Image (cartoon, rainbow, N blue to C red; front, top):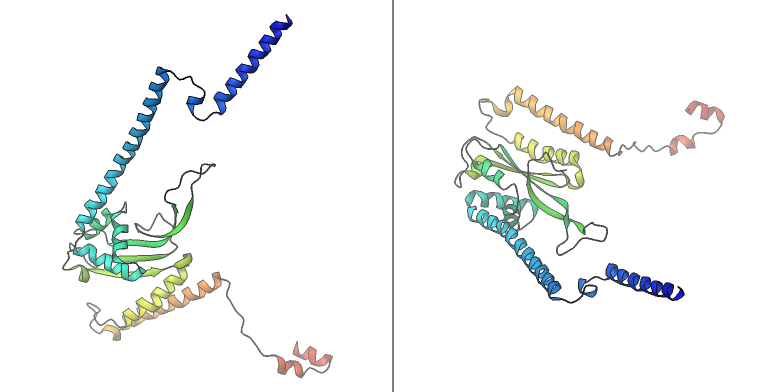
Length: 280
């Protein structure tokens, strides 16, 4: 009986060691016996990995093809936008073109050019969280990300606005062509670096729009132009709005400052308690 117990104990230890080796070992070959059947499994697994790699390459091809198709569509209209964007945000034209053809909203540009198309075309240029290239998942399942400047097309309603907005506005419902794009499309930049939208709007109105309006010669049906009382009232209201905007911005930023008053002359004349009471 004692020898049976010893044999059973030895068998249990052996099986426990085998089970622990099977659980902790990384490659399957360290716990499975070498046999023709297992070699076949290994070969199948290797083929599966190779096929998976090929599948990923095939999935990447449509994105590359799409970019090249979009690049082939670039004409004088696109080049005008690219030139304005490059000048406005300080990138070179090649970088701007690459950002545009890589954008999922590329079709918005074509909709903007079409007869009776979109009235505006917006681009944001700001810091966005992007995954580092050639990085894998961390042990906690997260990825390595960092803030990087990115130029992208937007409708302006889904992304937070924290940087610069470059906008193009149509002046008519005509089809935008390479020959009329500079006449039919207005361009501007609305800079709200660090998300300071009020300051960006104040600067845009006071430094860009108001000077442009005050130098405007053609006011359409209003023949008197700047001499017209309605035009003068309009410009006055815009000026007043900018002033209110500036006050609101300063209030929000807690930058209300009291005027410094020199009280030395008053203090020097205080000689006795009655003088203090009088000053109070």
